[in-house]
Image (cartoon, rainbow, N blue to C red; front, top):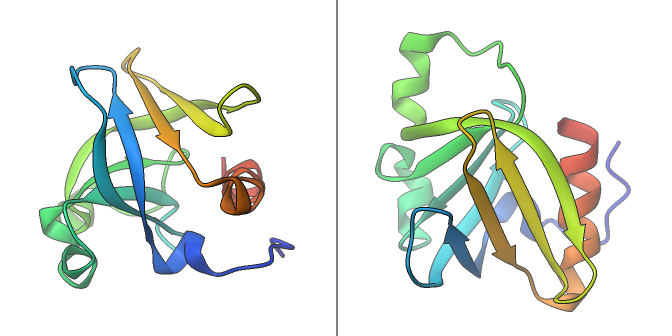
Length: 121
């Protein structure tokens, strides 16, 4: 379905990210939950086991009921668009709230992340 070379997108990996409200780039553990159609970030990999400690964006209008979304973590919005950044190998995600999430993804992983986001958004 996704045609990717690694499952790190779903397993999660440490990625430098900057949410538009942040002043600095932060290292976060980031993963995509394909069944909930959401992208999550947290301080560590252990937060994936208990995602209510993570923050997330829905990748599109979700079929997950609003009450069940609480178990996914702190919702920060819905993805409006995804753009691969050719100059730094990252991905820029825009939200329905007018915010941006920039992911500085390692070069060997960026194609996988872009492909999965392209399919799910």
